[in-house]
Length: 278
Ligand SMILES: [Zn+2]
Image (cartoon, rainbow, N blue to C red):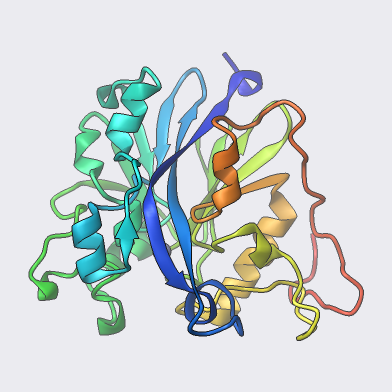
């Protein structure tokens, strides 16, 4: 097995309702709600069986502490894996883009896995700014976050690290302080699992009314870092896999035959980049 055989399987763990203007798009239509899937990914490199994030909690807990949630037949990641013929015990690595509540559910099920996130994210998750108590399911709320009691291997923030051959992480803060994206080399190019660096493919498209090269999300902790991270992904990705993009669910596995690749860092007349290109 090699890069030629590497496959990525999206797993939808449930649907969340989110506000278009205060979450999905900066200057989106506030008050308008849309339903989004919450997708984690199983990466099979042949040598390694890797989860990237582990999805969201049950609908009741999600709705009580976070967003209105409906499962609509979705199952949690371990059960979805079993349907793919993979035992959760076979997962040897769980890579976390970040430790928000809808990316870590059921992580302890993967009991033979190495858990990997950035040092910055782990620190912030255990001691978040009060604004983010809910995002990290702080004990202040009287609940226990899934990552409590787990040992992590830490990626030093601001470093790009190859975790196993063909699978690398790179820093993409902005949505939260310690966010990272996961780049997976495949037969067709570099597929980047972006976590919540942006939510949907439309976030990568321009907002011509505002003359923005990207229509960035409205949910962030640092807008400058968030914009830079999107530009970095734009420079590195031949295809992107965001957590909350519904169209991803049209295919069971990536790459698929005839999959259209994106053009990296494509200028759009009338808009500007912020970071000097590489
Ligand atoms: Zn998040």
